[in-house]
Amino acid sequence: MEITEKNRLLEEIRSYGFTVLELALYLDTHPNDVKALRLYGAVSDKLKELQENYEQNYGPLTITGVNSGDGWTWINGPWPWE
Amino acid sequence: MENKKNPVSPSRPTAESPVGQVVPENGRPMNGSPMGQVVPGNSMPTDEMVPENGRPTDNMTPENGRPMGEMMPENGRQNDQIKTPNLNPPGCNMTHDCMSKVGYSYVPVQAFNDIYPPAEGLARGTIFPELDKPFGMYGAEVG
Image 1 (cartoon, rainbow over the protein chains, first blue to last red):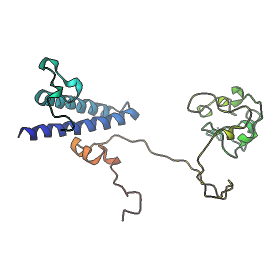
Image 2: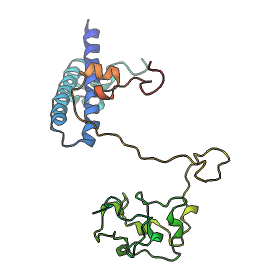
Image 3: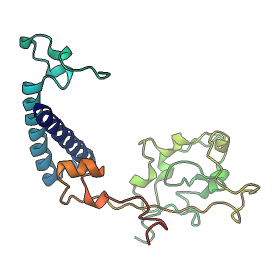
Image 4: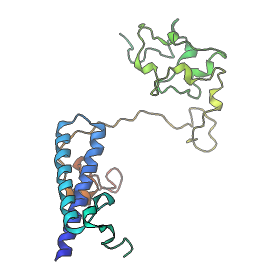
């Protein structure tokens, strides 16, 4: 049950991450597009929220997500080859 | 202003811009162009680049912002230094009868419309419906 929720969250992070990247590429060539800029702000905020939610519950996504107050949590999850 | 877009036309030499100094818009010498007539040792001062209407124009300067005179070697042997892939059929003797055709390309600037929801965008490989073109759309695969 927990695995399912964890994976669902991870999938959502991947999706929002892709949308942020696509909007960023669009904004590189349309830096004054107000509608795209607004959407970028909303989607990247949502992505940050999802990442924080994931890291609080399941551990760090990236090396900067390690909260040193909790100890070295980076090694708690499975390694890529596990 | 007649002929405003191309004030320095190779076909219309003037006192301000003799044919020998005409440079294509991309700033690079072309095979078989009037560039071959560059006078050896010509230092190409930039005031000679001013078009007929007397105003320097942006299209006289290549993208790197340097004046065109710097793009060209003074000895007029620039073709020795520029290697371009040969896209012509085998045996082509570099005459217009057999050389590949040239042309201008144009792609309209993308406008912002609605985008796919995140999950659909990731699945389809783009968040922009107008860019979501399955393979084969431009070819014979589409019936």
